[in-house]
Amino acid sequence: MFFQVYGEHAFAQWGMLILVLLGLILLNEFARRTKAGGITMFFIIPVILTAYFVAIAVGARTGAEWAVNNQTHIYMNGWFHYAKLYAALTGCIGFMMIKYKWGIGAKHWFKPFPFIIVAINILIAVASDFESAINGWNKWWLSSEGVWLYGGWHNVFNGVAGILNIMCMTAWWNVYPSKDKKDMIWADMTWVYILVYDIWNFAYTYNCLPTHSWYCGIALLLAPTVAALCWNRGGWIQNRANTLAIWCMFAQVFPLFQETFKDGRQWFDWAVLPVQYPEGVNTVKQLYEVAGQEAAAVGTTVDSVAANPTMMLVISALALVTNIIALTYIICQSRKRHINPYKEDVFVDQKYYKDSMARADVS
Image (cartoon, rainbow, N blue to C red; front, side, top):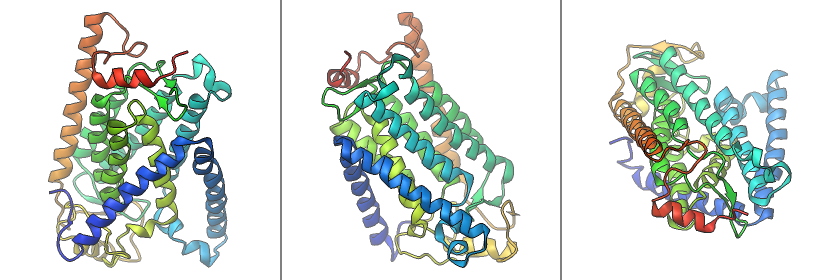
């Protein structure tokens, strides 16, 4: 329905999806259970990678062949990927500060930090959705990562849904370390928010990261959700930040894992295209042929090659509707109980909330 995951490569595509999902779950567990794991994943590795990214940027600017032809420079050199990576890492570090009560992480005024960093991450994606709508309204346009995107009403719907999703985050000050010091607990971020966030974020990846969305739109969203619903209640936002940062680091270094080239080739059989490319890899080839393989530059538009935006519109409309419903419920509950939903817990009657609070160290 959403992806072209049938035919001769189906086994590789589904098999790699499961492996990526399991890998993200296991790495998240490694990062959350001990200080050493968290420091390794979100301090040591990022420092090494930052030096690598700076070396690539300097080398590319001076014309060094190794840097100019580096897969990170070719496929992941746009503003969005770096912004998302370092915003996610900032969240991971801030959550560890709250979890372990490091420095300002133990201060009451720091408690809204999770809301602020999540809101920033959402706004980055919202900006990307609106960028696609502006640059390619009902036509294809070439992004800075060399991916052909198709803009339209789906971007507008999902951009608005993202703004509403920020407003669906409640009880900004009520975040706590867990009693076992493995997690940061945000108890009022229950399955309601997890659901509407996942729908919105999947729509975002489907609209704006279509060649990556099989992995970053399914496996990357399922990993923190499975953990939060099954064994780590209240820790979803920490799970989400951890897995997002881990995936962004991996994808920034090894983008060929999931890329489709200008001539329609894919480096690995498990690379997946969504149905907005009606003829799969042949649609990619047609777009470059029409635009000119070598002449195609960022912002190039093409309206003579067929697209199939139906599922983008469907999932984006669903994201908008579900976030409207969630926000309406929050407003109604707040008025009924005469509370400020951004200072007090809203979902106190839910079992998920009660289970989460049972894990929290509120001292």
